[in-house]
Length: 128
Image (cartoon, rainbow, N blue to C red; front, side, top):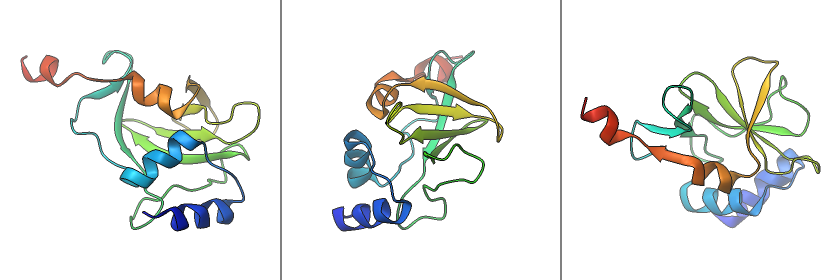
């Protein structure tokens, strides 16, 4: 993905994206973890990341969903739900997990915090 495509996306959604998320998208345009066992939190009660949606060139694109709060975009998929990002002033860049069209649960105050909180549990699962 190019900076021009990213800028076009921001113009289309009429919102600005956080710098850490833009840097990730410019490098990976979404992405899938290197391991099936990447969790935010412990495997028993954590969130297993499936993938991040792309902005360009993919079937599953980052988008504004009608059922999300006005200033949220859907950015990825977990094993049992989805990830959204707040783009409002109060919680700019915060990451939420949602399992229904109504409830959002704050899990990280920024995209960087979310990425840094991911743990690969491959060794734990593959050695069972």
